[in-house]
Image (tube, rainbow, N blue to C red; front, side):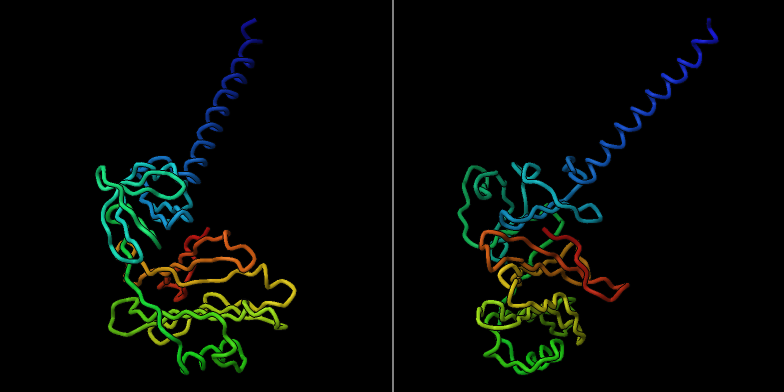
Length: 258
């Protein structure tokens, strides 16, 4: 009788062990995709659009983890203060019991995660057009571009001025083909981040880009670039992309995007 019970007991024990392993695996998988321990992750928010968690690598997070959290806060790329974030239709910011009113670009960081570098947008020039024509293998002038943005900034603080440039003609409805080009001139070298060749039949669905911010994450030697992605066909659909320079591959790489 005992001999018959032994296999049953062994099988039952194995089932229990497998169930425990399965539960632990699922719990670990859930934590890796949605961190729920704020002590392990630092956070970065961009308006109501992006909530990103950082713990050596980046992960998309959710607003419940930021509710009632204190963040170093930048408004329109200028430091404003260390505020408490409360969830609403937009982020409500409090300095103690005092509501902080703001308008424009809001970026917040967990303490010691990062800071925003103030930037100013300038006009493109003939040298930029030469680079643009070389990348696109076309001959275009300033009149062929209906949206452009350019930021001059020293991305690695070595005394050499770098540039971030975006140009497109997507907003012109009467063309047969379109371009959407985003690139960085970093220490004299050109790094193409986006080069979309768009046809007339789907240009409404193509993203439009905008240079949103430059941020210093954890004191890295090269600052990261944040690009906003919107859509010609849907002004309410928007998100952000963060690019980081990889010294090993010598390329700009997307480390996280919405």
